[in-house]
Amino acid sequence: MITYDLFTKLYGEAKTYDSLELYISERGWQDWMDDFDIETVTAILKKIYEYSIESLQDIRTKLNYSRIGLSRAYYIPLRTLENWDNKQNMPEYVEVLIKYTFFIKEMTKDESITE
Image (cartoon, rainbow, N blue to C red; front, side, top):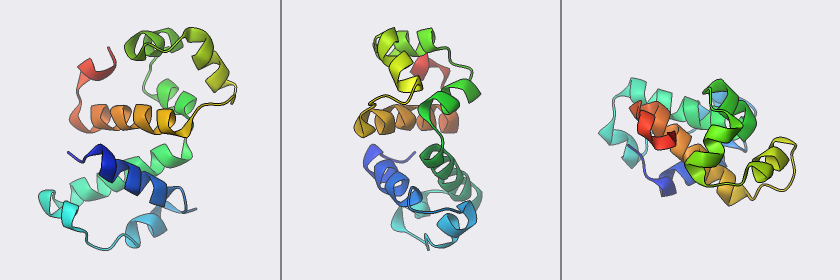
């Protein structure tokens, strides 16, 4: 799977695009892609792009995580998550780190990451 450093690089690039197709097509072939087949590369880039445009609350809801479950899994106070869901002051590094763990969970189908 891809590293956190690579995820943050691709995530940052994805945030600058308005179109998934354009984001994927402009990546070109990169060294990290040698470890995956083309379908997996496409799935990785698609998922990173989706995460770059969706809020943490949207992703959490889509993945069926309750606010309480996320609070327990990440040791984040429930009130803090409520504030973040209301668009209040979530540090970007926290958002990216949590999205990375969701990304790894989805790509590896590892249920233990957020339980």
